[in-house]
Amino acid sequence: MLEDSATDAELIERKLSESGLVFTGRRVSSKSGFLQAIKDKDEAPDIILADYTLPSFLGSEALAFAKEYCPDTPFIFVTGTMGEERAIEALKSGATDYVLKERLFRLPGVVNRALEEVQERKRLKLVEAREKEAEHEIFEANRAKDDFLALLSHELRNPLVPLLINAEQIAGETEDPATQERAQAIYRQAYHMSKLLDDLLDVTRITQGKITLKKQPVNLKRIVEEAVEMVRPLADEREHTIVAEHVEALRLNADPVRLEQILVNLLNNAVKYTDKGGLIEIMAHREDDNVVITVKDTGVGITLDLLPRVFDLFVRGGHSLARTSSGLGIGLTLVKRLVELHGGVVYATSEGPNRGSTFSVRLPIGNEERDVAHKSRSLSRNAAQGTPHRNVLVVDDNRDLTDALGSALRAAGHTVHVAYDGKEAIRIAEKTQPQVVLLDIGLPDMDGLSVARTLRRQFGRSMELIALSGYGQEKDKQKAYKAGFDRYIVKPIGVKELQEIV
Image 1 (cartoon, rainbow, N blue to C red):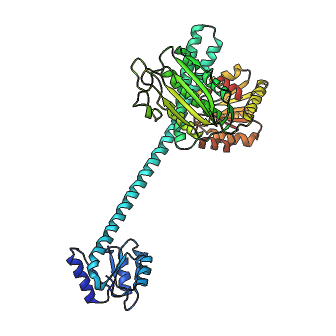
Image 2 (image 1 turned 180 degrees about the vertical axis):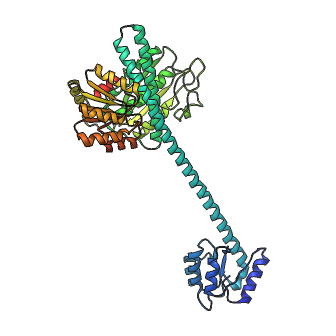
Image 3 (image 1 turned 45 degrees about the vertical axis):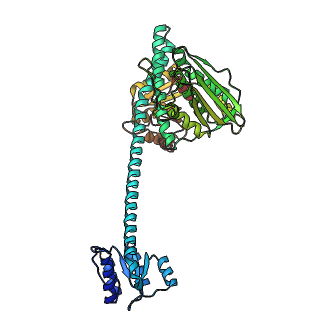
C-alpha cells in the first residue's frame, strides 16, 4: 500500500478485512520505500493499492515503476480526488482500476476481481505453456518419425534392387516356363513391396506439405493406358477384366506422375477388393471445365458405416480369412491428398456389400498447352536408343546390389567397373575415367557426397554423377545436388529404367 496517511491506510485495511479478505499488508509512503517493496523478489506484492497524490512523487510515477518491475501485479489507485481525465489517463497507462476513498465500499469487489483476473491469466499462461510443450513434443515426435521413415526407406530399398534386377534378368534369360514364372513372381512381389514403401513415404510427405506438383499438359488417355498396364499383371493373376473403352481423348494440366499414381491406386484398390473373375471399368469424360474419371468394380462393395471413412489413413475394408487383401490402408488416403493438391475432389459410392464400388475423381482441366514435356521425353528416349555404350562405375557397399547393377549394365553392352566403398571408387575412377558414375550416398568409409565432391574437383564436369540412394526426402536430394550430382534416383530401380538413365 502506497499511502502517506496512516488513518486512510487503517480505513482501507479495515474495509478489506470486513469483506473477508485475509492479507498481510505493507505500507510505504516514499519513492525509495515503494521501489524497495516492488523489487523485493522474496516478498513480491500480489496487489498494489496506491494513493495518487503523495508528498514526494505522484502515483503516475509509481504506476510506471510497477509496470517496469512487476508488470503482472494488479495496480489499483485508491485516492481522494482524481478527476475523470486523470482516471482515464491512468487506465490507459496500465492501471487495473481506481476507487475513490469516499466510496471504499467498492474496494473489496475491485480487489477480488483483480486477483481473479490474475489467476485466470496465470491459468491461461499455464495452458499455453502446456500447449507449446505438447506442440514441441509433437514436433519432435514427427521429426523422429521422419528420420525413422528415411532410414526405413533406405534400409528396405537397398535389398529390393538386386531382387528386382536379378528376377527381371532371370525371366529374360531362361527359356524354362517354370523358372520364368518363379522369376516373374519374385519380381511382382518385390515391385509390390517397393510401391507400398513409396505410398507410405508419400503420405507422410504430403501431410507435411513436402510434395510439390510438377504440372504440365498431359494426354489423359495415355495416362489411363499406362495405369492400366501397370495394374494388368495383378488383374490377370485374379482373372479380372479391365475395360477402358469409354475414355475421352482429353488434355489437362496435371502432374503426369502423380495422376498416374492416383489411377493406379484406384485400380489396385478395385482389383484387390473384387473376387476372382470380376469386371473393372475405368471411364473419363469432360464436364464443363473439369474432367471426371470413374473407376467402377463388381467387388465386395462398401458398407454404409465405412463409406464416410474410406479415405482415412490406415482404414481398410473388412474382409474374411478367405479374402486377405494386401495393403496398409494408405492407398485411398494418398489418392485423396493428391487429388486435392490438383484442386480436385474424389468421392466413393456403393450400393452396399457385394454390390461393387465406384470411385470418381473430378479434376480441373487447367491450361491446354502443347505437350512440350512429352515431346522432350520422346526426344530423350529416341536419343537414348541411339546412344553408344558407356564406361560406367557403380559404387555401393551392398555387394548384391552392386553386382546386380553391374551385371544388368554389362548385359546391355556397357563397360562396367564396381566399387564397394568411397576410397575404392575414387581409385577406380582415376584409372578408368568413367563417363557415368552410379554412386550410393550411404557408404561406410566416406559418404557419397564426399566422393562426389572429390570427383568433381579432380575431373570437373567430364562425367555424369548419378546418386542412387534409398533416402528419398527433398533435403537429401538438395544436399546431393550441392555436392555435384547431376541426377538423384531413389531406389529401387528396374533394369529398363537403369538402362534408360545410363
